[in-house]
Every structure is written in C-alpha cells, then in structure tokens.
Amino acid sequence: MAVKERVLERAPRVLARNPRARVADLAAAGGASRASFYRHFKSREALLAELDVAPELDARDRVLEAAVAMVGEHGLTALSMDELAGRAGVSRATLYRLFNGKFALFSALLRAYSPLEPVVKVITEMRDEPPSVVMPEIARTVYRSAFRDGANRTGILRTLFFEVSSLAPDAEEATRQTLATTVLTLVVYVHEQMNEGRLRQMHPLLALQLFIGPIFFHLMARPAAERVLGVHMDGEAAVAELAQAWLRAMAPSRRRK
Image (cartoon, rainbow, N blue to C red; front, side, top):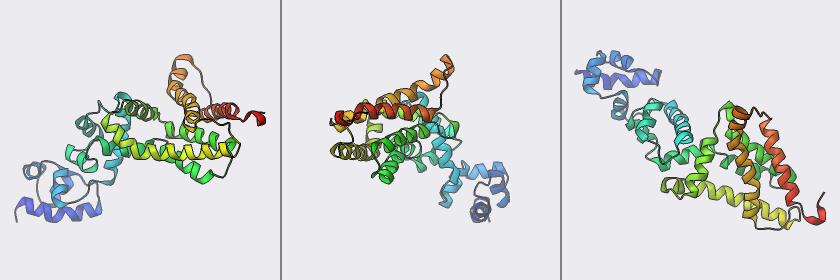
C-alpha cells in the first residue's frame, strides 16, 4: 500500500483518539516520515480536507481570539485574513472553512464578544422590572462584555460604532441582524416605560443615545484614564452611576425625585 493510502486509512483512528494529533503522529501511523507526509499533503489541514474532517474544535476559538485583538487594533476594513490565519496558527484554507469572509467573521465576533445579545437577554428576562432596575443592569452587562476575564474588548465596540457609522459593507451587513434586534428590543422597552409614566416622553432613539453615549465614552476612555491619569474606579459601579444619572434626567417632571 502506498504511503498516501496508508496515511488516509490510519489517520482517522489517530484523530479519533486525539483530535489535535500532530503531523508527526499522523505520519508515523501511516509508516511515513514527516518529509514523506509533506510530499503527499501540503499541510495537516490538507489531510483533514481529504478526510472530510472538520478542523479541531479550538481552531475557531483561536481565530476569534486573534480576530478580536486585530479588529480592536486596526478595525475590520484593515484586517488581513492571511495575517489572521498566521496569528491564529491555522492555514488559510482552515480559516475560510470556518469563516468564508469578513461578513461571517464579524458576525461571529459580535455574537462572541459584543454586548448586543447579552443586552437583549437582560431585557427579555427583566422586561417587567422598572427602568431603575433594568437600565443599571444593562450598563453593567455592557461593561462585563467589554472587560470580560480581565481582557480589554473595547476594540470590538469601537469597530462596531465606526464601521457601521461609516457604512462599511462588511460591517453593515454583518451587524444588520444583530444590531437591529438589540435596538428594537431596547426601543420597545423604553417606549413601554414612557407609556407607563416611568420615563419622560421623548423619541426612544434619542433616549437611547443619551443612555449609550456616556457609557461608550467611559469604556473608550477608561484604559487611558487608568494608564495616563492614574484614575482607578470600580467599572461596574461607574457605569451603573452613569445609568442612574440617565434615570434622573429621564424622570417625568411630576415624579422627579
């Protein structure tokens, strides 16, 4: 049996035991050297493609981790898919099997790292609660998403704002569904609270801009304030205080406290 056929026959058993098996392990299973392996397969991913085996489970996570850092540094438009593949330690073919372009990649980044879906979850679970309870929790949720696990994810928020506001095609299409759902959910909740007399009457979108603006600015300025000015404050407490300021501004005049 030829080397290529032996590797193709025996590699699935190796991968079943260890999905992250190295080229050396796969070659040895087929009774081949690494050099012989590479004469028949350009890469490990090329073998997986011939076997019709999906890339290892953590490849997607590695790509997203690398992408959120790169997007935060340079924005979506400047992102090089080739450079992303290199930083994530995957082949270009694997990258495009996981995400067939920037649209799919940015959509996945929004689901994984942006506060959009968590905010919708908060409102869905707390929609019967008053704004005094819901809005500070939304603010804290946004903060947790931006600084989850001690990492600074504000780059994804900055990209979301600037790429969408500039109507960049990749970002506009990628955010249309997720952003529209989040904004609509927020608008409906705020409008209902206005009708209940818990918030002053104004256009719900303007009310949301009044809420989001200070929190967004705080998240963007926080790292510089800590590094340059030496200003340190509890993040969740800070955004909750901004939410309280919004609640005071939005209180109906007859119920202003």
